[in-house]
Image 1 (cartoon, rainbow, N blue to C red):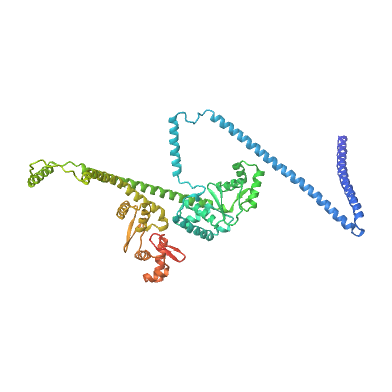
Image 2 (image 1 turned 90 degrees about the vertical axis):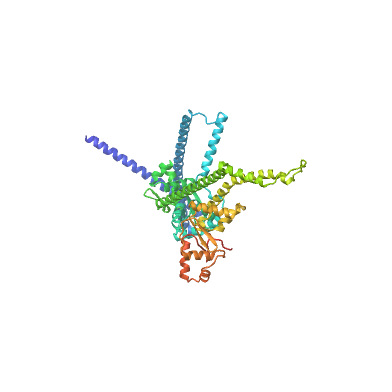
Length: 551
């Protein structure tokens, strides 16, 4: 036993000796090489440098040698790290290729038992074409927010509205300090817009923002995906790659924003994901703390989304109600016209009673007795009738046909007027607050249908009032103003509107002077009309879009 212990101790001692000897020899070799390099440098120094500066030059050369050695080591470490990254990306690409091959195989297996969708007969082709047309019509009717809303047709009135709204947008951005952010999520801006601006439609926001971009009020609108856009206020060059957009989408859409969940979501490896995250971090977009990805601009996304969803639901309900009212109006007008046509036809085809026949016969007899009979010795010569009398029957039949045509055209005319009035309501109700002078409605209709009479327009308006599509009317002197929504105007407000009709946009002082009001009463009426959306203040000028005012 003692022999084994002694042998183990001797073996261990020898092992330690050889290790120490090897390390010492390695250090000795390094020192010898260092001395050799110094000697070599010393030779050059002795050869080219004067004696007084040799020590200083030797120290400088040693420092340079050390820097070169450190640089070599850093380059080797960097190369090794890059090799690891490339190997990781290669593995990721191999995994993606394997997934694509697997997906292709599954697709071929599932599609192998399916029949061809190509029509075999002419009948099938016609059916497919009809189905396609129906689908296209359905898609066109859907209220979808397109990628580029700037392509929508904008008339002068809408353009003025957009221009005014763009100024309101900038005011709201500044009021809530949104311009201090690197970027503004569109949902964040929508949240404040819907809270502060009444009657603003969701579909109008992107066109207004595009106008602001064209006029350099904002720098850019970056589309992350179809539902998320970022509004850039300051930096013009802030752009995102597709992988960066994936991460921004992930942070906005998902509740758990950990790096591990991102790897599952995007099917990335850690090294690649870290590289993209670092890039976004350098741009100041996000930060990663305790494995959680945070974008400060998305903090209140849940509150934004809730309000926006409610707003979109309200708009959808309003649109459905409007379509329903239009259908009911069309149906009622059609029924009324059909009833009128039946009454006319009934009167024409009504049989004459026996009593009426007897009365007519008696009248005929009396007329025959009263007219003296003329006797001719010879058969009277037949004279040719004037050409105008020959045509009387033809003209009579032509007149009858024209009357019938007018009867057929009359319903279309009423329907056209109704549709134009409803179109006017849709187009300008947001601008005029639901109040409009009769002459403005009339001019809008006559623009496309100049032959329509004043009486026909008024009759149609009365029918729309019966259907409650027009809530009422107010007589202001010789002018009539119609209300397209439930508006309660007090006497002062009516007097204010009446004074502004047919005048150029006035200032507050003009109303005080013309109406002989004090400033308090004038401001009170201005405020109430502005809150109802009837009055607008632009450059100290007071305009009422619902009435006719001179330029």
